Image 1 (spheres, rainbow, N blue to C red):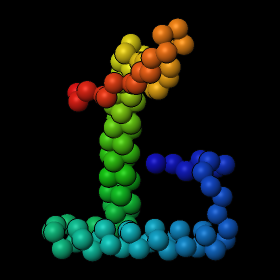
Image 2 (cartoon, helix red, strand yellow):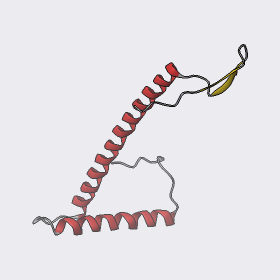
Image 3 (cartoon, rainbow, N blue to C red):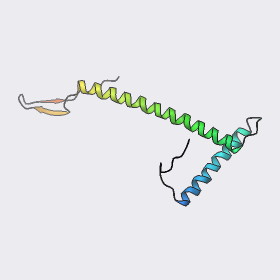
Image 4 (cartoon, rainbow, N blue to C red):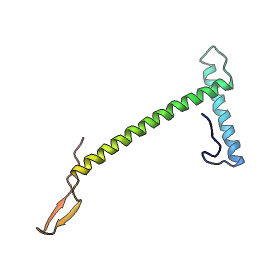
Length: 106
């Protein structure tokens, strides 16, 4: 994961110090977690790579979820275009009131 210059929110020097402290804390917690579960000695770079990989995994899962939701929304909109009737109105010619039917459970 690379942080491109100019992308994302700009941090003040205080914000950068906080982000750096948070990053160090995450690396330290990752090292502590895996040190107790593996016989290999891990270093900060190993922990950074682990964090980057798991962040990438969840970012990809989120992107796929958003794609599925967008497709489902598009299908729902397409179905609603076919069956849509005015919400509540009056038929001027006949003087009749009508309502939108309740949505059926899909």
